[in-house]
Image (cartoon, rainbow, N blue to C red):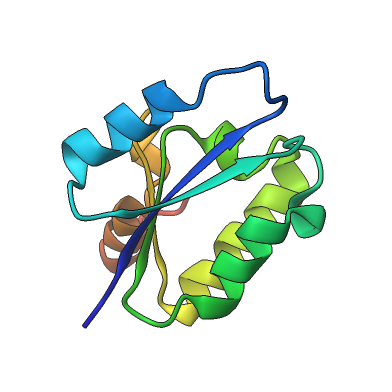
Length: 116
């Protein structure tokens, strides 16, 4: 069975993560929430995120409140997006739905060229 994960990240323990929880669970009430306190600039140094990346399989979904929760570096973020897309992992960005993998797949199916 495909799993849905919600990834919530804050940069410092002084910030609140609750808004991200609320937003993700409002749209995906069965999502397994993964929390992390770490800067957004370094994807591959985040322990919880890396555990998640190792356990997701084809057909699973990762939900983010915003694309900035996945990455703040555009190039690194795009490489990860592409890698997960090619593995068959669905990516959902609640605040930027136009970049969800479902939207990207639809664009590819309709032969629409996306420019970066």
